[in-house]
Length: 312
Image (cartoon, rainbow, N blue to C red; front, side, top):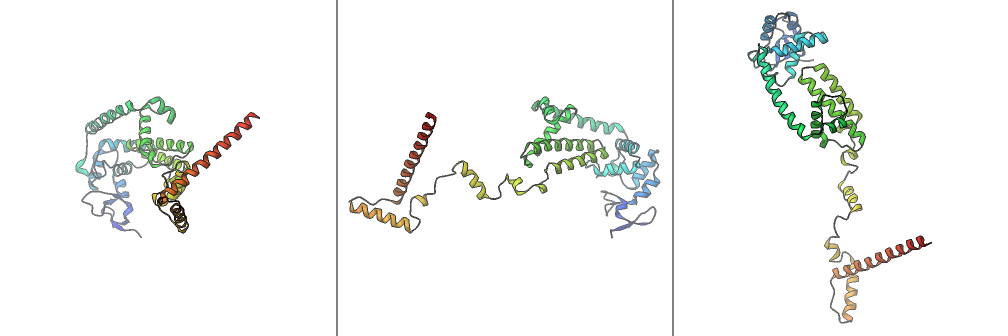
């Protein structure tokens, strides 16, 4: 059973989930002292003074612009505006730590902040426009989106592409759609359109699952390009290009009794002929020379056969 607390208005013991989350230092249990039901029942959202008083009682800020957004959400969803407002305040990193003393009663202040932010965003966007070709972006992500959003799509694509194994064109297609949906989700959240953001988030999840973009869906082969061990990697590379010559310890000294016996026999014969003893690496060099002669003869023989075939 979950933890409970008493509402100071209805004096009933209720689960903590029935109280709004709070980051105010006045609320040690991280919950408002008044339950959600009492907050909704006691507020008259047509009277801003009443709204401000109710927010003061739970130490939430009154931000006029955010309140207007909540009213719009109420009109679209028929949800209680105070619930929409508190939810939006809590979900935003920019506002969730604010208390009533941080309230903004005049819209002009918020507009100044938004205009300043907009100017900064526009400056960044102008820089991005210099780096990207809009026509190519439209061809890549599809037509019909606002021009500015294409730069955001590409930014997201570049940020995330190193985290995914795009092994086929289908993976690439799903990943592009994933980036589009993710950007759309972020934009909806920024505008306070949380219902729309939730819909985009669902599409992000669906695309990730359909395209096997989630790490949990990928096999070891997917994550390693078909390789599970360093041995497999070395073998694949060596099949196409020799990594290095044989180590000196295999070519400059004998490795077993057969090598030692052969080396001793060769030096015995050389001694009989009055020749100096040879080093083992000279024997190995002789092997290499004979191998090259043999390979050359085989290559010439095949070439001759091909000429005969053509001549016939």
